[in-house]
Image (tube, rainbow, N blue to C red; front, side):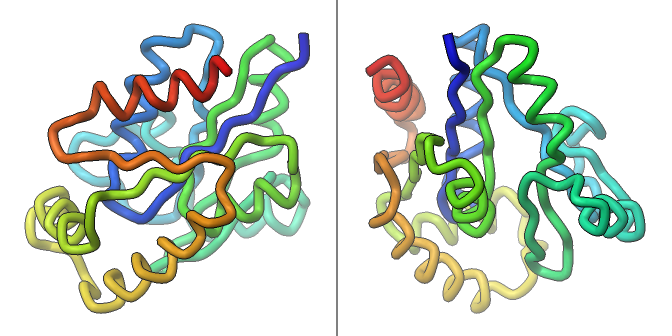
Length: 184
């Protein structure tokens, strides 16, 4: 049985990570690729679990050596998935879950067109901005840039294989919808 690649994407603050964590609890053979980043670790994050926190030089070396499956730069930080991590998960017999921003999703879909792309959206841009402010405890930089980015990212939903609205306080419903898509 061939393993599948799934991409969960959507704008920042839409709940991609929260949805993914619930899917991983429900599907033992679904494994998340731990993304690499050069950004600073946030409170509650764990290196190697939340992200692989790398310095810029190490990340750049991976890019230069062709070691990245996908990567991009946002808000002056690099983000991406290592080829070796994807390969190891698939060789172990797992389906692979990418939880990435829209740019990462585009790159993965170009690299692996067979991947199933699921776009998660909020009920509104204003709701999304409120979620970001709450998550970052008022420390979010560049709110006007983020709003513009969200509006651009929402247009990417048209090219997704599936779209799911992550309604406020309806996490179970969102996860059920995505799980049904994966089972189909």
